[in-house]
Image 1 (cartoon, rainbow, N blue to C red):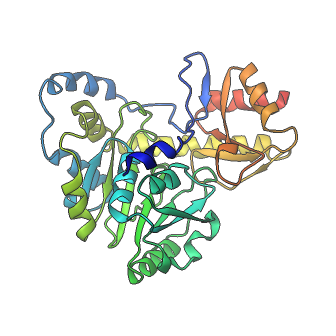
Image 2: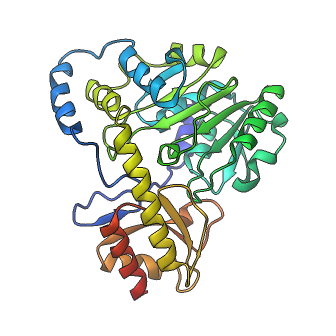
Length: 336
C-alpha cells in the first residue's frame, strides 16, 4: 500500500445505522444472537487483561470444524474484510489486473486500488465463465452481495480449476454462506476463502472472522498476519458461536421463511432478484429510490440505497431479519 494511493482512493459506503430508534435493514445482520454468548463475552474480560494466546489455536480448531478444513489452513482475522484485504495485499502487485464482479461488494475494487492494481469488472452472473488467465486475482462473492445469487458448486469448482491452471489466485468471499446449506470451498488448492462470523451470529461490533488458505498463500498469510490481531473477547465469542449448530439451523429456517414472506408481499409490484442470502435486492424505478427511502425513514426504518453499488440505479436492498421486521417493511411499501 502506498501513501499517495491511499489518499486518492475514496471510501466505500456500507449499510448500518447507529440510531437505536431505527429498525436498521440497511445492514445484513442477524436479528438474534446465540443464547449464552453474552456470558461468554463477559467472562472473556479477564482474558483481555493479558495478550491473547498466540497463535490462537483453539479458535483455529473451532473454525476448522465450522467449515470442515485443516486447522493449519485457518488464518484468524478481525472480520471478513480483514481477510479480504490480507489476501489482496499478498496476491497482487501494482499494475496487476483483478477480476471483480459487479454489482458486488464495493470494497473489492477499493482494496485492489489501494495495492495499485486495476479492477476489471465483469457482470456477477458471468464471472465464473470468464477466462482468468489475464488476471493476478479473481474474486467471487458467494452468495453475491447485493443480488443474493448462489453459484452452483460444480461451476465454482470448475472455475477454481481454471484459475489454478492460469496461475490466478481465487478469493472466494463466503460472508453470507453460513445462511445457506451450501458447503464451503475452504481448503481447496489455489483458493482463499474469507469468512465473517459477525453477520450470521448478529455481532458486527465484535469483529471476528478468518481466512482459509493453502500452500504458499497460507504460509504468506500466517507470516504477514499481525500477532494478537483478534481480541480475546472476539476469539472467545467467535469460538463459542461457531459451535452453535442449533442456532445456525434455526436462523436458516427463519431467514428462508421471512425472505419468502417479503417476496410474496412485494413481488406483485416490484422486480426482485432471486436470493439465497439474508437480503433481497428490489428494483423500485417506480416510485423511485428516494421515495422509498424517505417513506421508510418516516416509518423509522433504514433500507440500503443500492445506488452505491456499481451499475445499480433504481434499487434498494432489504435485510431479511424476523417476522416483526418483515411486517414493518411491508407497511413501508404499502405507503409508497
